[in-house]
Amino acid sequence: MTTSSRKLDHIRICLEKAVESELRPFRDLELIHRALPEMDMAEVDTSCSFLGRRLSAPLLICAMTGGHPETRKINANLAQAAQEMRVALGVGSQRAALEDPQLEDTFSVVRGVAPDVPIIGNIGAAQLRKYGPEVLDRLRDMVDADAVAVHLNFLQECVQPEGDTKAKGVVEALRSLSRAPIPLMVKETGAGISREVAGELLSAGVRWVDVSGTGGISWSGVEAYRADVAGDQESAEMGRLFQSWGVPTPASIVECVSSGLEVIASGGIRSGIDAAKSIALGASLAGAALPFLSPATRSPAEVSKVLAAYIRALRICMFLTGSRSIAGLQSAPLIIAGRTREWLEQRGYNTAEFSSIREMAR
Ligand SMILES: Cc1cc2nc3c(=O)[nH]c(=O)nc-3n(C[C@H](O)[C@H](O)[C@H](O)COP(=O)(O)O)c2cc1C
Image 1 (spheres, rainbow, N blue to C red):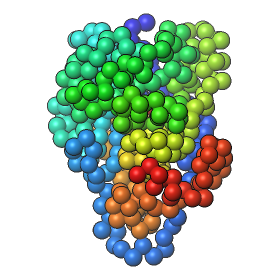
Image 2: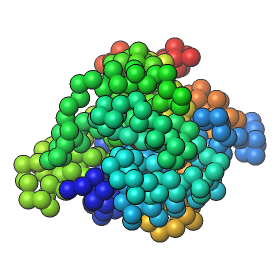
Image 3: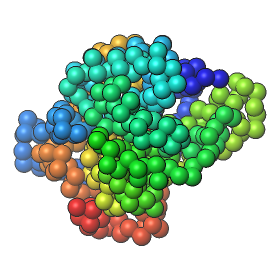
């Protein structure tokens, strides 16, 4: 199977099947309601800067697609909505266009439609090692990117029949890019980034991560559906077994923020409330992928509608916690309960003194 046709398979499964982890870790978090905000809602400023560009809110449409002729329209719709709502946009893995340059325009379409918002290119860690540091220029030029994200998806590779599980040498490959002429990010794809990995990334010169933790889409689950269709029952069972594997998103945010990385929160962010909670945990931006996929198959207006609901809920959270700005929301008090609290306590964080964890990171 080619990279290009696999892309289409993935989209079809994400649109039709239950592909999310069973965890709902954001239910463990509560922002503290402030009955007396002592400000007007009109004073709330959700805007921020990201990669040198201004955003209306700290939101990212995470990397999804490109790489098959039928995905061009999806990327164009996402880009038009990102431009209209002034939020950042990631493209899916550009590997297919490296293998077949005729597919480049399924990615490059985004910059034509979204000239003013940050665009993040994308490549897998295995391909980065294969093509070497020079590939970065091609990826950047293809979409006129403001940054390039290297994705880590070894859980998926373990379950995929054609998966590449050679993980040796990735940190070295990242280190060789630390002086690249474009900001480099590292992102997971639904299994999260731990403090130990955050430390390795920092030592390799990486400053930005998108945690993409457990709690949203599960690529292990997606591959289980592909294995079903291929009649590979063993892989299907393995995929389901690992459907909720990984570092849950809120825990991953705390582990990466406290390590000193700039953090984008993603993985199960299903509303502006989840986005607000992530930012209160110390993330700079929040992102989502799956909630935008189905709207993007229809029209840019449908994507904008979902984004508008995220931004409205984020604004309400800011008003009701007395946070005038995103920096203010980053110091809003919050309750950490349940499994997230247990996770963090076992990892040595004092959740009762959560503000000191955030301070430590600054
Ligand atoms: C259809 C689809 C395709 C994706 N393709 C990529 C990809 O090519 N590269 C990548 O880094 N992440 C990819 N992702 C992962 C997302 O960027 C994100 O990390 C993950 O979906 C978690 O966010 P969510 O729970 O909001 O979906 C994809 C996600 C979806 C839904």
